[in-house]
Image (cartoon, rainbow, N blue to C red):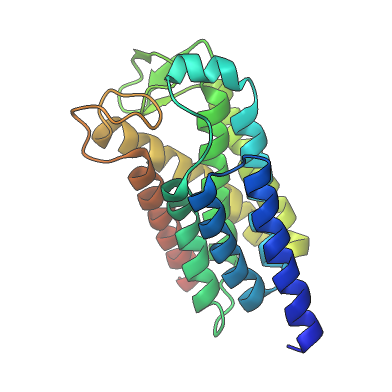
Length: 238
């Protein structure tokens, strides 16, 4: 890596930090940690890996900001994402990027991003649905309730997972067969997230922690992504 390449990547990281904070994509802590994660991935694995992470952030932000006032009323929470949310969604892809220095783990990386985006799309857009059901027993639930799913949300989860899978082909040089696997892992991870939410997050909505919650929304995100990547690893190991 020459000095010019280092300078260009450093500038990209600085611009990234300024933009995500200036346009209120993340709070100051989230912006700094996202920049840290982005820098690790950019310097270790290159522009393709970084762009896939950036696409997740852009699309996820669009989904979060869509009809934001309506969602604030329904969920009674702020839309701006904070440090812990960045950690929950970004720590696993970062670890994969580090371990991928010696082995090509692009399938695991794409799978982690796919789960994160599928869940973001399902939760941020699924809450707009009029009908939702608990994933554990399929009883009706108020939209936005932890562990509740909807056809609308599932459709958006599939779109998010498919987007990451499709872009992984040119950006990560992933084979089409593995891209299909990314879609499957992305959707599976989204369902794991919902099951964990229904089981351990209590009766609250979104990031609101209820008195009976054993896990927070960020905990559930981190665990679901971790489990999904483990499943993806088992697939390629077999």
